[in-house]
Image 1 (cartoon, rainbow, N blue to C red):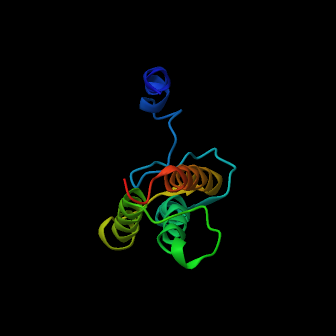
Image 2 (cartoon, rainbow, N blue to C red; image 1 turned 90 degrees about the horizontal axis):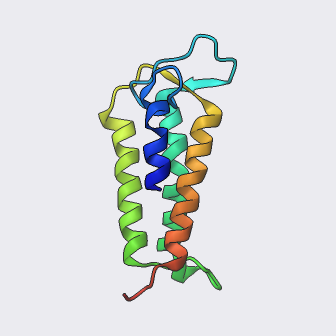
Length: 124
């Protein structure tokens, strides 16, 4: 991970090549991709992981569920709930973002949350 982070700094620090998904992202004028408002894009990023963590917290209610309630699942749920609340009530968004980029990041966050919920112990 450190190697990937170190080698991608130049690309992410260049406004022409960086992934534009933050509230301060500038829209590329030549982009032909489907653009959505930044607030909606940020909800696409955080909502799938929050929903998955919610399922983890209800793990005991679902029979044969591999996702289980654990301290890690609780902390992940708190993290993503806080992010959703920030998107809805704190930050002011003015730009737009590619829909596919937001969905891709959202799927990644959901997969990481899934792995955390699967491997975390209920009683560490």
